[in-house]
Length: 114
Image (cartoon, rainbow, N blue to C red; front, side, top):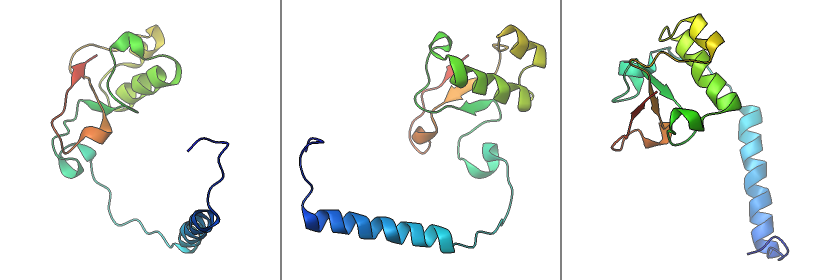
Protein backbone atom coordinates (compact mmCIF):
# COMPACT_ATOMS: atom_id res chain seq x y z
CA UNK A 1 0.00 0.00 0.00
CA UNK A 2 1.45 3.39 -0.93
CA UNK A 3 1.18 6.47 1.22
CA UNK A 4 -1.48 7.91 -1.07
CA UNK A 5 -3.87 4.96 -0.67
CA UNK A 6 -6.64 5.12 1.92
CA UNK A 7 -6.66 2.69 4.80
CA UNK A 8 -10.04 0.97 5.14
CA UNK A 9 -12.10 2.51 7.95
CA UNK A 10 -12.26 -0.75 9.90
CA UNK A 11 -8.48 -1.15 9.80
CA UNK A 12 -7.98 2.51 10.75
CA UNK A 13 -10.32 2.13 13.72
CA UNK A 14 -8.55 -1.04 14.91
CA UNK A 15 -5.22 0.81 14.70
CA UNK A 16 -6.62 3.75 16.68
CA UNK A 17 -8.07 1.41 19.32
CA UNK A 18 -4.79 -0.47 19.63
CA UNK A 19 -2.82 2.76 19.99
CA UNK A 20 -5.27 4.05 22.60
CA UNK A 21 -4.93 0.80 24.57
CA UNK A 22 -1.12 0.92 24.37
CA UNK A 23 -1.11 4.51 25.62
CA UNK A 24 -3.55 3.62 28.42
CA UNK A 25 -1.24 0.83 29.57
CA UNK A 26 1.82 3.08 29.50
CA UNK A 27 0.10 5.89 31.41
CA UNK A 28 -1.36 3.55 34.03
CA UNK A 29 1.76 1.44 34.49
CA UNK A 30 3.44 1.35 37.87
CA UNK A 31 7.00 0.29 37.07
CA UNK A 32 9.19 -1.00 39.87
CA UNK A 33 12.90 -1.74 39.93
CA UNK A 34 13.30 -5.40 40.79
CA UNK A 35 17.03 -5.96 40.42
CA UNK A 36 20.21 -4.69 38.82
CA UNK A 37 22.60 -7.12 37.19
CA UNK A 38 25.50 -7.04 34.76
CA UNK A 39 24.44 -7.80 31.21
CA UNK A 40 27.64 -9.72 30.51
CA UNK A 41 27.43 -13.06 32.21
CA UNK A 42 24.35 -12.42 34.35
CA UNK A 43 21.58 -11.42 31.95
CA UNK A 44 22.57 -11.79 28.28
CA UNK A 45 23.70 -15.32 27.41
CA UNK A 46 27.00 -15.36 25.56
CA UNK A 47 27.82 -11.71 26.15
CA UNK A 48 31.31 -11.11 27.44
CA UNK A 49 32.60 -8.07 29.36
CA UNK A 50 34.46 -6.79 26.29
CA UNK A 51 31.29 -6.52 24.18
CA UNK A 52 29.76 -3.19 23.22
CA UNK A 53 26.30 -3.48 21.73
CA UNK A 54 25.72 -1.35 18.66
CA UNK A 55 22.53 -0.01 17.12
CA UNK A 56 22.47 -2.46 14.25
CA UNK A 57 24.80 -4.86 12.56
CA UNK A 58 28.51 -4.39 13.34
CA UNK A 59 30.40 -2.32 10.79
CA UNK A 60 34.08 -1.96 10.10
CA UNK A 61 35.40 0.76 12.42
CA UNK A 62 35.61 3.40 9.62
CA UNK A 63 31.89 2.82 8.98
CA UNK A 64 30.99 4.32 12.36
CA UNK A 65 30.73 8.09 12.28
CA UNK A 66 29.27 10.88 14.38
CA UNK A 67 27.07 9.80 17.25
CA UNK A 68 27.54 6.07 16.71
CA UNK A 69 31.32 6.39 16.87
CA UNK A 70 31.17 8.64 19.93
CA UNK A 71 28.78 6.23 21.65
CA UNK A 72 31.18 3.32 21.15
CA UNK A 73 34.10 5.44 22.38
CA UNK A 74 32.21 6.71 25.46
CA UNK A 75 31.02 3.16 26.20
CA UNK A 76 34.57 1.82 25.98
CA UNK A 77 35.78 4.51 28.38
CA UNK A 78 32.85 4.02 30.80
CA UNK A 79 33.34 0.26 30.88
CA UNK A 80 37.09 0.63 31.44
CA UNK A 81 38.00 -0.89 28.08
CA UNK A 82 39.82 2.23 26.86
CA UNK A 83 41.48 5.20 28.49
CA UNK A 84 39.95 8.68 28.27
CA UNK A 85 42.95 9.71 26.20
CA UNK A 86 41.82 7.13 23.62
CA UNK A 87 38.58 9.07 23.21
CA UNK A 88 40.41 12.40 22.94
CA UNK A 89 42.49 11.09 20.04
CA UNK A 90 39.55 9.29 18.41
CA UNK A 91 41.29 5.95 18.81
CA UNK A 92 39.85 2.97 20.63
CA UNK A 93 42.40 0.55 21.99
CA UNK A 94 42.17 -2.36 19.59
CA UNK A 95 42.55 -5.19 22.08
CA UNK A 96 39.49 -6.87 23.48
CA UNK A 97 36.64 -4.57 22.35
CA UNK A 98 33.98 -6.32 20.28
CA UNK A 99 31.07 -4.63 18.54
CA UNK A 100 27.93 -6.74 18.60
CA UNK A 101 24.44 -6.41 17.21
CA UNK A 102 22.00 -6.74 20.13
CA UNK A 103 19.25 -8.17 17.92
CA UNK A 104 21.36 -11.23 17.20
CA UNK A 105 21.68 -12.54 20.74
CA UNK A 106 20.16 -15.95 21.02
CA UNK A 107 21.44 -16.77 17.54
CA UNK A 108 24.91 -17.37 16.19
CA UNK A 109 26.84 -14.11 16.57
CA UNK A 110 29.29 -12.66 14.14
CA UNK A 111 31.68 -10.49 16.08
CA UNK A 112 34.30 -8.07 14.91
CA UNK A 113 37.13 -6.57 16.89
CA UNK A 114 37.52 -2.78 16.65
